[in-house]
Length: 111
Image (cartoon, rainbow, N blue to C red; front, side, top):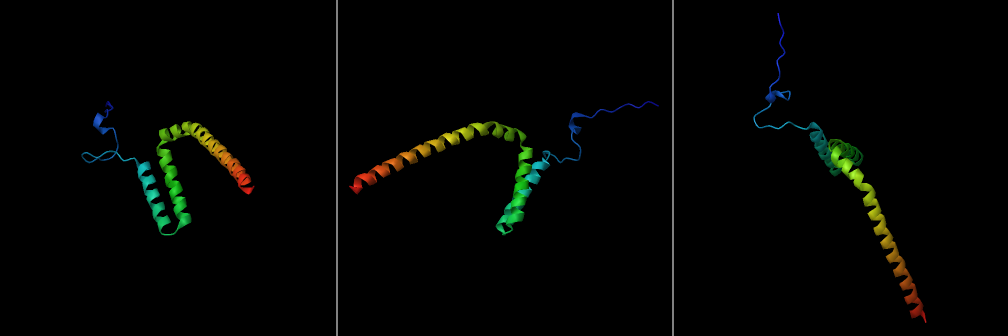
């Protein structure tokens, strides 16, 4: 008796029954969305601690599912930090200038 391996057809690439026109579900997205919704509802009902834990775990699941976006954000982070530092330096310079002008104006008006 000879055993002949049967190859799968191209249509049988996914396990489990599928209905006509249905796309495969990404269960990580479903879990992340459900956890985020549950966390939001818990926060709205006043359960802050449980809501924060649920929201944080939902966000972690969402980030795990979006590895490419997370890597892109991670690569952009140093540039954004440098840009924020430049803006803060400009604000600090402006505040120092305003403080010096205010002091000079007080001296002039005090005469």
